[in-house]
Amino acid sequence: METEELNTLLTALYVKVDDEIGMKRWLGRPPLLSDSELVTLAVAQALLGFTSEARWLRFARGHLAGMFPYLPQRPGYNKRLRAALPLVKRVIRLLARDTDFWLDNVWIADSTPVECGRSRPTAQRSDLAGWASYGYCRSHSRWFWGLRLYLICTPAGMPISWALANPKLDEREVVAAMLDVEPELATGRPGLLLIADKGFRARWFEDDLAQRGIQLLRPSMRDEPARPGERLLKPVRQLIESVNDTLKGQLDLEQHGGRTFEGVATRIAQRILAMTAAIWHNHRTGQPTTRSLIAYDH
Image (cartoon, rainbow, N blue to C red; front, side, top):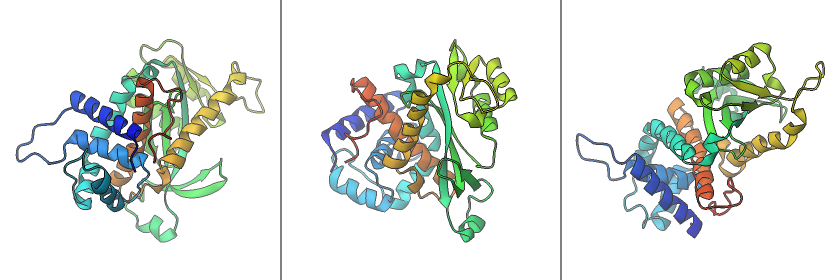
């Protein structure tokens, strides 16, 4: 059953998206479910923990009919959602920019596994083969077949940039490529600090960041002296772990159910959008814990 807090968040989100994006022009008959309603519906699904679209639409018809007068059938919803990936990305950025967190000059970078299959036949026959691959998760000491989600966020958990990549790729090269795609992100942020783990150690990477005006803060290795600011790392590193826990524990990141490039990317973006929307709404309403989803997930 949805809560009053969830209804308030969904209403605020719909109004924000509709005011900023509105309904695009259609040559023929416009869809009965607008883009603003689609985004709001996708956020509600992720917050309430429905990994099955069929079960979600049955629930929505019984509990959210007052907010969404028209709800498509599962194939139609799936098709609209997969086609909405650019829109979802745009809304994530829109909400992030609408908070004070966007101006934060401290970023945290990390990656986490996104499993897409376990059996060998799945790895051989999946449409994701070539994009997804085998990788090793050091924190859980296990191999997985899938992708890695790279997230650059603020200490509050607000996403600055994110990407899905083959787990065999060098994580430093992926983060550098993310910054290459949007070089303007680091512009106008004097003293920008990027916090990362030991896996980001490389002279070329630090030099690349320095050219962008970014200083790297990471733990020192055993064969090098203590690095400046290292004592501040432990509590900040716990923040990115808690962000990953929010995505995996509360938003079912690894139960995305995607089987194609578009399906996986959209479902991951849907969960990042849900977390972003919760942070945005909590910040706008003065909640003490900006990344808390407790008020919305039941």
